[in-house]
Structures are given as C-alpha cells and as structure tokens.
Length: 107
Ligand SMILES: CC(=O)Nc1ccn([C@@H]2O[C@H](CO)[C@@H](O)[C@H]2O)c(=O)n1
Image: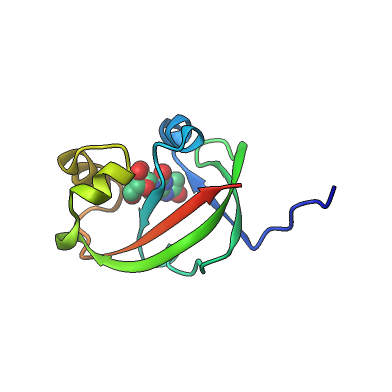
C-alpha cells in the first residue's frame, strides 16, 4: 500500500467532525489566511482544539466568495441554515467581507 503524501493540513472545530465524516458538510469557508489551498491538494485534517487527526480530504474547488453572496446552497453544503451559517462565520471571524470557499471530498 502506498502511504498518502500530504500537500498540507487544515484544522476544524471539533463540533464539525461528525458532519465532515458523514459527508453532510462538504465545504468550509475561511478567511484570507487560509486562501492558499489549491484544487487537488491532499490535506491532513485535525481538530483545532487538540490537533487530533481525524481524516484526510482532497480539495475539489477553491473560490473567493463575498459574505453578501452567501446563499442557501452554501448553507446546505455546511449542513446548516443560512442564518446559522452567517452567525457561525461572524462568531469565528467577526465582520468579514471576503471569504474563501473550499470544497473537499473525503479520502
Ligand atoms: C479551526 C480553525 O482553525 N478554523 C475554522 C474555521 C472555520 N470552520 C468552519 O468552516 C465553516 C465556515 O467558516 C463553518 O462550518 C466553520 O465552523 C472551522 O471548523 N474551523
């Protein structure tokens, strides 16, 4: 078996782990500090809180997205309502105009 080689790593808050592993959450929205991911990148995924590795993903889409352009499709891909999603983003980043959408698949 060929071991997986990584192009990078990413962390998620523990509370999203189950949704990521079940396939219910297929995107993440980040700020400019995490806009460097590229389509095809294989990432090691761990929890923000303790750094525990819990899966590997491959990036399938990266695009800039205005906060104002968030819609219910994005919310579905986050397994949330649009109101919940906007609240979560504001809680994490404060007021933010420009997000980076990262779509991924589980490896
Ligand atoms: C741990 C860390 O470094 N940063 C982040 C930043 C964001 N997110 C999640 O992405 C979506 C939109 O922002 C929501 O589901 C967020 O909770 C996350 O899990 N971890």
